[in-house]
Image 1 (cartoon, rainbow, N blue to C red):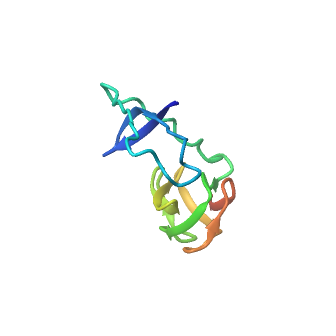
Image 2: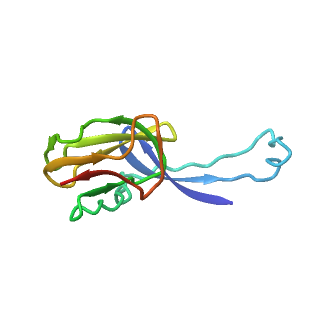
Length: 127
């Protein structure tokens, strides 16, 4: 069975076709000469679209994913610019940076470093 996957290497996205050999996987034994076919696209393909922007009108910034707060880069009362990094989340050993959707003052930080956060939960308010 052939399966098409998307792989990112050094920031470039490639589509890869691999042969999945399911026989022997359940028993933990693979055939000795298990052929694997792969093909890198001739040109990088566009990365998937980014997660939707938080609700900027209300000033609430929501977590785009489930993970752990690696760092909070702002404090309540601090002025921030649009696009300024305000928080870093970690999920599956990868960091995701959260940016201010608008300029304003940080009204509240609702989560601390080391705490778990669910996708869609409000983590910060900007007034």
